[in-house]
Length: 299
Image (cartoon, rainbow, N blue to C red; front, top):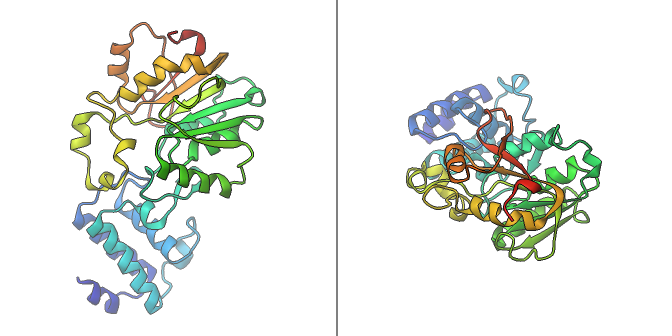
């Protein structure tokens, strides 16, 4: 069915959802930026485009659509299929739990298991969330983890660091939207380069960690994201090596380092057999995020 035919034959939200799922499946879309299937993606894009509550589908399924609403839905379905843009770039928003963040193609679409851990205030590794007075989010991107860190630890002053000027602009927008400008300082820096003399109770990072072979094989959706936010050398650990080499200089004596590394646990442990990594439980298992105490890091 062409879009012209769809516009004349489809009438209700239910009709358009069915059409979207069929079109997404036929296009062979990849779902890895929030939704993991065609139905959830269609529901999200449809409700967002119609300015309806994202958690209320049932009351609207049989609602008939106005002409301009039908056209808007067909256009966003078309862009998703033909341009292979992730849904987050089409709607300029991404969600981590209940928290919404502005995003566009200047930043990677937020997706981090560290967000889950911050929701739990890094329990039991942080015994008193109010005792965290300073924190660093390295490779902040959209600023989402810096914001979640500030929300999790009410007394913390947070530095949000990124090399990209474009990402810094997006992060500033999100920090302002959460009214956290007095607690989050956004710093342009290549890793720790512009952080001389700064020390923190907590350093978190969701750095680039995709290995070279995987970068070449990425689905089209990922090619819209900034390259520098994805790849990190042959084994995906180039930036993680920088963190492990320099983090101790920027942690207080009882400080913690929390880093997400994708599917690279085996490679990391092989490269650093002497480091006592603690692997944190997430919704996907205990292979993706490690924790180290300052005392365990190399000098």
